[in-house]
Image (cartoon, rainbow, N blue to C red):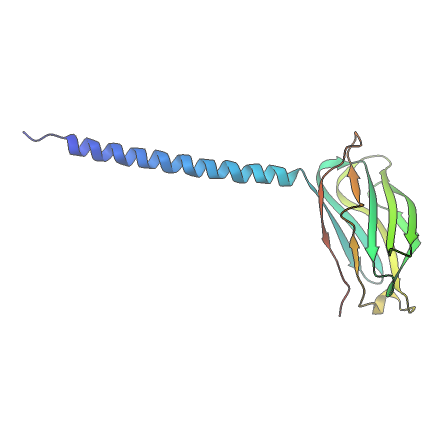
Length: 172
């Protein structure tokens, strides 16, 4: 009489192998999902250039944005920011609009007037070339968000972590 021991042993090894592989895959998914949750808790601030000479600051966030202190760094030798053109969007009010010629920075605040936003344009302003060239022919210079001086706030005035993206330089 033959025993079925080798058959049962083979099936047991196969089942254990499948279970171990499933556990490993599940652990990998847990780590990836944790990273996604951490990323989703951050906001993304982005600069856009649109013709003829408008710079827009947009935000995408998992939390509602109630306010922000924004600092733009720019090449003061080739670009000029027109602070009088600063305006809020998506029910936001802008205040400040201070130019620092020494450091080449433009600082202002954005405050939610009615409804806070998670996604949308926070503010816009206009730029020109220092040689008087308007935005239609502007194809040079550097403009970017300051990672160190820019802050985004939630309802409790707690800072929302963020990453920046968008234009760094206007080039041909």
